[in-house]
Length: 257
Image (cartoon, rainbow, N blue to C red; front, side, top):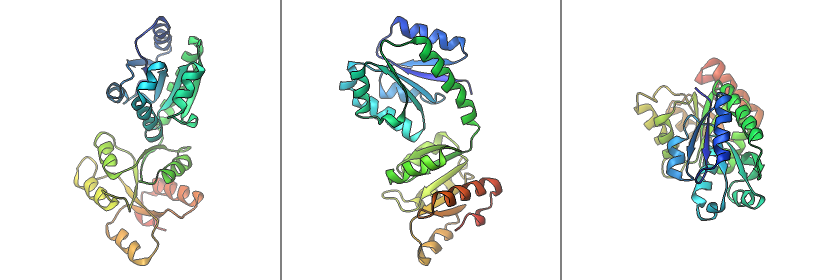
């Protein structure tokens, strides 16, 4: 996959053109879009590095920042933001600073931005080689914890509902799905059935995540014949070793705890 940066800016200016030319010299492509949720979502695929040129317009377009926050959290996009101190503070009201890879204070150093983006885009090649895990759970705190645990070794995409998972799988093929067994509206059992019913996704391994440890619940989980299950109460090291073991052996019976 070619390196690509998604540049989000209202209007255009000379500095932007210079930046695009500098990135092109480094072999990095740029897709430039207006700060529109529709345009961002249309161009996001293939670009794991995002650069937002902040401006006064953001105070009237919170949906753009919410969209970028979701991409940073759910799809692990690397977000860089350029702007004044006031503009960066406006961005951080919606997007936590921990989700922002780099901030550039105006007046910006175009060469410095180009160098940073080139490095991030280049590192994406090794990221693409990592095993890809789709994490599905309605508990945002649990998602964040699991993402921090697994993210150092795997590519992790996090979604908060069963239908978001189905929508994601329609366009992507993760190497493993960690699926919450108990979710409102579309429970994990129904999501598994939908995954198995489609030829394009039927072979994707699915491991249930469950907080229930009683015999009846465990029997119900096993009866659905997922590729394994993990107890949410297991510690970090146990969960990591179980996932690693699964990728090494692909044997569902060895994942059960």
